[in-house]
Length: 335
Image (cartoon, rainbow, N blue to C red; front, side, top):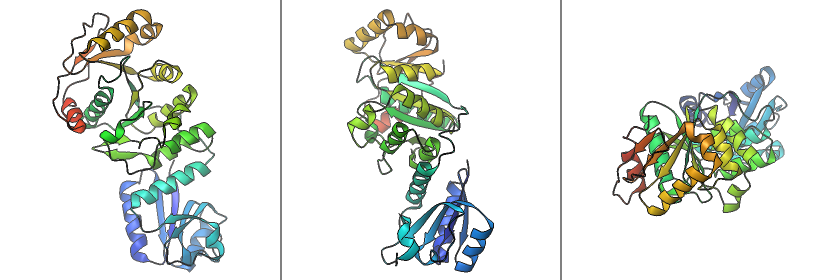
């Protein structure tokens, strides 16, 4: 879905700068048009329909906005915001373009009612799970995602742990993933559009900033997870799901939708005992066995007699979590 956006402000340098960056970085989702005079604005509004209009405070009076789905005010502190401008939602004018785009896409996603996602899966979904905590699931998830990026693929990392460890690996300067969870709970709006608005990227890996609080993650149902994965898989090559060490409704939903499951284990006795219990006593294992790969992390040798596919990762000594996953990404996960 391509969003048609009109940027109307008297500052030609500003509109040109904004248009150039949007065209360069967001051409896959935004078709941007600009104007700098009231006369040209009236012509455009009379002849075309726009999904979003970003209007400078001096451009709003007398503008017929009935053909704009979501009119917004490009706001600066020195602006006069009376009249029609006072009725519009505000977007801060002087901030990074990425933040402007994120805010616009989030507001448009909430206002959009013509589809919650593309419903055309093209991504492979890889679930990363373990019956034991602390075995390095997040590190393995990111190493796998980084490997896909190095192979020329687009990868989106989705953390569904109860307590997110993403801040140890990524900057957390964007919009919280809680906005996405709220839309899932409300069951309205365009999920995929919101994903485009709030997703961040670092070292080529797409990701979301951590939830605002613990309860935000807990409201997710298995149905919510299915909708989320469907939306994510329509806009990337690989979705990597970092899962909690549980086996409840959400985890089973991910297992069901996943094309591959990386089952992570390390060298500790407790982790290997839990793996043995899972593979011998839990019916879920037989359901995912054919698509499972055992990942022996930190130099582990778990005795993988029940797995036909095994990846062994070396132990990397570093206090920097990012260094560890980047080094591990040089290993092959294809078996």
